[in-house]
Length: 171
Image (cartoon, rainbow, N blue to C red; front, side, top):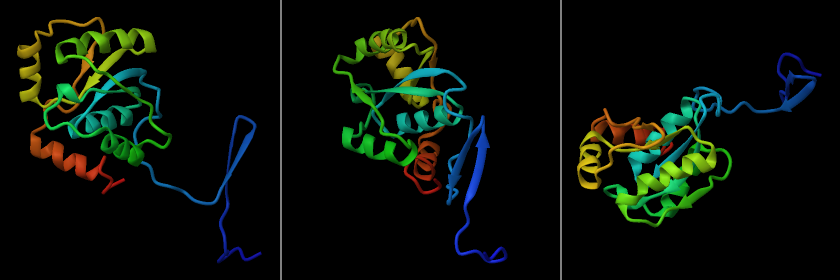
């Protein structure tokens, strides 16, 4: 046994009478443990919505994903959405597809919150799109609160943060 310069290092972590053995430490994105901040329904379909999902997950929010490209400008194809999820979600992402008119999306997502036991909705709108959505579809209220984690960010900031986090450059 070479203690000063071993060929292989094994780590042991003991929790609740269980031992975990591992040989490699992988740096994650940081943040709170998934689920400690509750569960939400997240409407994905563009880069800003993926960034919103990433930011909410860093805050410990467990998300149920719904693909709703019809409410976003410059929507991404489903294959790209799933590819990006593979970069920051360690387990395969279950993404449900919602095919409805944009004005019905909010009611559907609100209902899904109740069905999934979620306490809120997460949307990835910048401020311009947020205002358009309210005016276009007359969304007045929902039973569940709605979080807009990227609303205060400029398009350039969203692009930069997306590139540095979701796209994988700084993961």
